[in-house]
Amino acid sequence: DAKTTQPPSMDCAEGRAANLPCNHSTISGNEYVYWYRQIHSQGPQYIIHGLKNNETNEMASLIITEDRKSSTLILPHATLRDTAVYYCIVRGLVSEDKVIFGPGTSLSVIP
Amino acid sequence: DVKVTQSSRYLVKRTGEKVFLECVQDMDHENMFWYRQDPGLGLRLIYFSYDVKMKEKGDIPEGYSVSREKKERFSLILESASTNQTSMYLCASNRGGLNTEAFFGQGTRLTVV
Image (cartoon, rainbow over all chains, first blue to last red; front, top):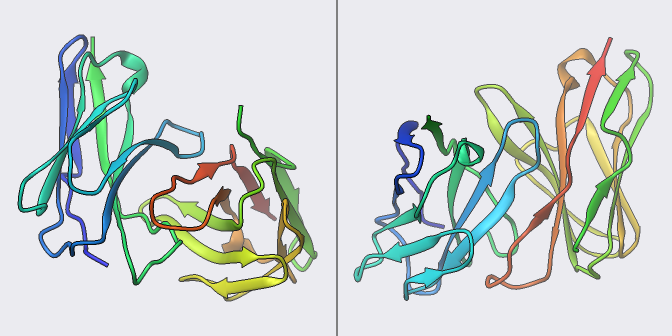
């Protein structure tokens, strides 16, 4: 499966959009991009996933570049409760049904 | 609401004890997972089960075994607990296939003394 690269940490002002980047330059055509987050002392929580098209749900938007080599998770109006570690994961034929986590991005939303 | 429930939130056990961590999901999911999470090491997959009585080793299976006798229940067993198994343990489940998200339990913080 494609390896992902994320910045280790980011800050965002409360009420502003948080844009979390993920690089997956070796992604192949049938691999999905998933985002999870983990708030301190809780289990990870699914946010969103996509294959080729941009996706939006009640939590976030996922923008996947046309060449699929990178993606951005957008939290449109960040709140203090969005402070968490965000994980970008690529799932494909090698991992099959497994969910393999990298180190993620620690997002701090600042008042 | 979908649920993955871990039997204990906090657990303290003595070195050498046999420890059972239980996980139950109510979503009829085929797949279940056990992870451990340690500072600086992130979430690491211990074992994965894709069906009843079926299991596959993850990245760090040494010192652990698992049991899945029923579809909804996946147990992690520490045959002889050691202090280096002090950690946060997380259970998860999902349906089969790549286009399906995983649901996680709240975690069990195990301390081995």
